[in-house]
Image (cartoon, rainbow, N blue to C red; front, side, top):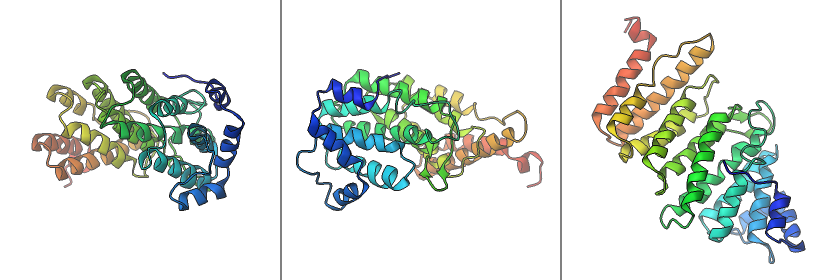
Length: 302
């Protein structure tokens, strides 16, 4: 797992100067961020690129959905994916910070607190850094593998699985984790074993005991479908993975919630693979699993 201290230490390590503190202040000004968005992401003269991006990440702690999501995340996404704003070294630094114990793993294990926002949005830095790197592979292989390990650890350790929070906006931790898992699997440095771990992590998330109803099933199924369609895991490994999808056993209402989440995921996966015209044998296996999970089929009332 990547560990790094807070933003002030990062700034110290990179010898940032007074103008970089001004850069941070700019990044915390919602109205200025809005103007930057409206002006094709043109930043004020003298803005330090890395300091600005790091400050945007700090805004992920905010309970203000406009500042956190519609401005800071959206601007960071455009800067990194449309404008290729940072050098390779700076992108690696930004990724390491996002994955550290003050961001992705900040108060990991908490549930129902506002710490969910920094975790749930720090994970989105992973696609912003990895996806543009797929073509040219400028990131170090070690960093990519460390990132995959961190994403897998986070996905399994996160306990706050809320989607939309009234008055504060999206947390959406499972959906965001699914997006990051997809980016990890798609990167050329990812190994067959790592992609198989991603599939198993998807299965874990698809059967949690919290109700998930903000399209998390679709996001998880999309991640799994892309690995399956590209043939990145063996047929035997895929069959073992499919065998995980059995009716949950446990106390009510947890077992019913797990079953519902699992059925939604398998239905999403079924149609994604069908639409992508993936091997019909696998689609038939998913159909069999869904029938085995269905109360109506098992009660012979259809």
